[in-house]
Length: 148
Ligand SMILES: [Fe+2]
Ligand SMILES: [Fe+2]
Image 1 (cartoon, rainbow, N blue to C red):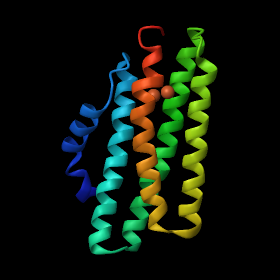
Image 2: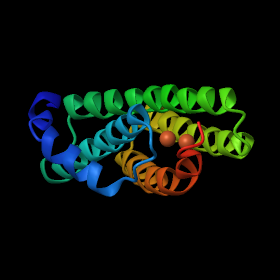
Image 3: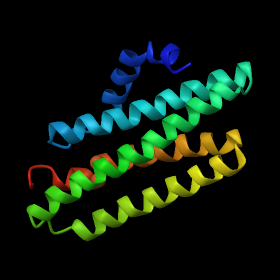
Image 4: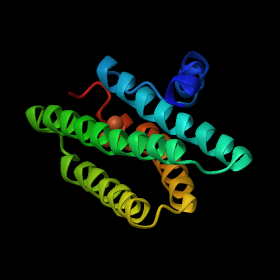
């Protein structure tokens, strides 16, 4: 199933790029785009599941996307924090707290999905992450633009 939905990668990446802010660092912009892309991919998959119904294969893909998302987010946050630390960025502590909060929320929803396999949690995770990443990248991440 993942192969089938990956066909739309270019369109989804374009959509992600259009919605995000330029934080001034190529790698971080790329990370944001990938993070949004995977949530748009999950959104598409959930829409397909709503029509066609749940399958083991579908659940396998949902869990695969979510596991990758949590790991990718942690790697991205660590990279931002490392650069902010090196630059003695003044708002590092507040920024780190934002990252900690979203990782805790993602991890807790991921646990609900692993324990209960209820599609509602997959919807919750993708909508929470998408609204968070746009808000975070365009407000909090923009604060380090040009300062690292
Ligand atoms: Fe970021
Ligand atoms: Fe950040």
